[in-house]
Length: 277
Image (cartoon, rainbow, N blue to C red; front, side, top):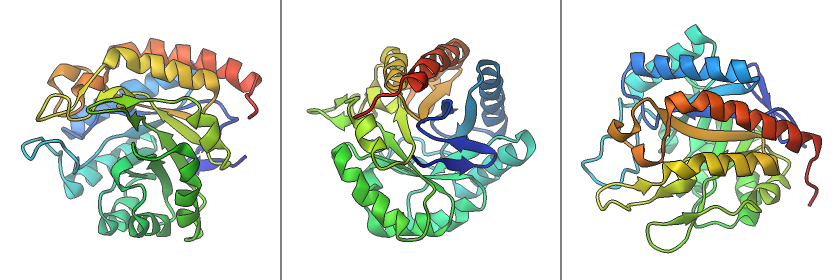
């Protein structure tokens, strides 16, 4: 079983749970720091490791009019500042090969969006940075196809890999999460992440934007942690209904401390009694 270092943290399917959480996109520096601070406080209190996540650019919005974020220059400055001044590892999406090396200078983890997970040149560019690479499994892929993606990144000499489940397409505007995918992807040896919020997303469900069922995000998180997983990915906001993106599936910030505490209890039981497939 492989362990992946993210700054001072170590993530593994057999290690205490890591929480990857933050807003969908960067809004302002103050807003990002507020969420990062509150999340770190909640994770510290529950004994969870914490990685802040936010996107400087949401390049895959449903509509052309959808807000995309601060942009790469301003966004990476904010993320780098959180990493350096708050001592919190940070994760962000990359959308082109050229962005990989630039973003790797400012963040600890490069995230490959689900729609790009099979793009060979993208995976190689990300792997060549030496950063930790978190690949979201495409909504169109079976979990047993993920070793092909792992092989592409490993070909660069980079073995700092995380694999994320975020649901599979199930008809129009609907996703379904199959918990069998977690132990199946774990067979690669790499840490597996459950994206609890995007797995309850309804892609394009509101016509010009995506819908979601945020009430089920904690359900997905609890189910995944009970199975056993290296990390849980959750988007959070103090006012999701007025967030610029992904509001319908984001968890209220004030609900996160109790949820994280609950997840750590499930995690302790799961790690003490691991499932063997």
